[in-house]
Image (cartoon, rainbow, N blue to C red; front, top):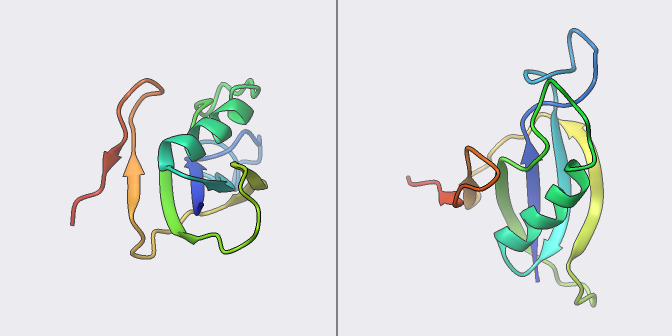
Length: 107
């Protein structure tokens, strides 16, 4: 199993400084086999949001590493939590719409 950070740009908050599409990002720490599986778990949670400011699906996935724990089930380990998502050289994928194919970032 791998560890992924799944990201939706922005958040649902009304705070003028930290909320909305330019505020902190909505993130999830997910254990899954693939980035698609990780995103689908986060998408299920995000689909329940009723925001008019940000989308209700994941827009980016970062591969953080390998889960060395004993669990074998894919699941959200933490989240949603709000923070600015920074790419630190990890392998990553992006999509522009909910139904778009995930595109790997090219160096």
